Image 1 (cartoon, rainbow, N blue to C red):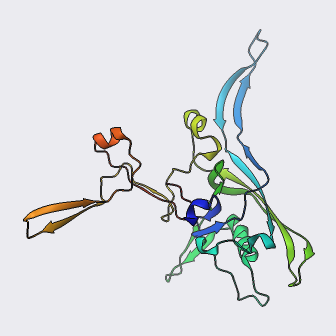
Image 2 (cartoon, rainbow, N blue to C red):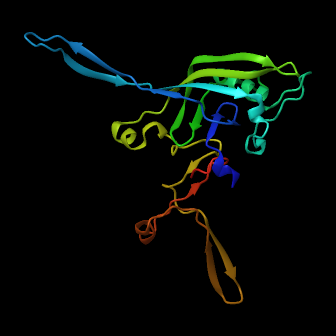
Length: 247
């Protein structure tokens, strides 16, 4: 399926938009800081360090878009629509850049009573099978337009730079196993990923055969069970992330 080939994307939680990227960046910087306080002790040649905290993990991204690269992208796997309202007409690059600029801005919902709620921006980003992060844009976003200018009056080359800080805490054991790809199996809201491994088996449908006077249970399971789990009758149901092929 085409979904299995989509490994570079950005999901905007506050706008519920799934942005397919044509390629991964040339390089991605994944940075984690650690903080210790130090106390100088009498007659010691080294201070006593006390652990304070770690993080946040920050992933710095530099995306480069060539307009001709996006001519063949499968737009059906993205829920972005080309904006044709503009007098010049927007292609997928224009639409993608506009949504990327929105990753640093909140969404406001206004109700009939006049009350307003603020939905802060948050994104999830994946690059191939190495980088995944769920977080917030902490450095702002920079868009750079570079010549040549095409016949339609638009720049052919666009660079986008931003940094995302992780919002989920992880310990050393988990990071030692998952590394920079951590967090992908955490719950994605809005139906992109749903993990019901702790939920009871709800995918069982019973059909009654009145002629035989017996009940037949047709069970549909989407599982990745081990033989041991099957023996223990443990229900592990996972729904595929649309457009990604990841379960």
